Amino acid sequence: MDRLSIGCVLGIASVSAGMGIAKLERAVTPARSVTASSEEDPVGRAAVELAIDTLLARLYASISGPPGAERDWETFDSVFTDAARMAAWYPQLDGSVAEMKMTPSEYKERSGPMLVASGFSEKEVNRELDVYGSIAHAFSTYRGEYTDARGEPRAVAGINSIQLVKTNDGWRVHSLIWQQAGDALPIPER
Image (cartoon, rainbow, N blue to C red; front, side, top):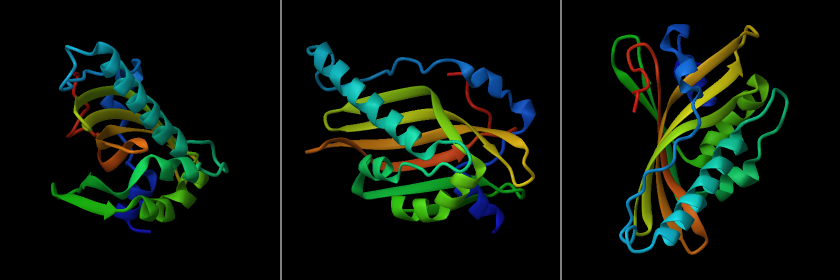
């Protein structure tokens, strides 16, 4: 498997120990939301934030688990729209960036076996959320752990850019783009 495929399989690549993963141990911060009716309807705003919180928690949980545990692909499928797309951006050694585009189904095919084998687990540690009517955008900072091919534990981190839409069935992910963090691209303090 080539380097780019391995990165896709894990969703993100290793972050060096010097990056300071410990800084990401803070709890998820309350979402900052801007809605058309935010000031007039704080209860409605809170309901939207709760629905999105629940959806994103289901997304992260669906791909996470210990080695040997099958992933919850039924839940994974349920968080996306039918036309959803995913993409990963990976810095290359020569300074360029490689993109890997896929559908959620392609992600499952490529990533499923490695997620089970590596015991990959990912959790959200911070979120910046903006909502306008029936569209929303979340910058979701994540931290993950897995076991590499040599059996060594690894920590990873990065940011998911998640575009959401409110459908007749509730909020769903329409697009998910992620980029790994690293020495040249640390997680911002904010």
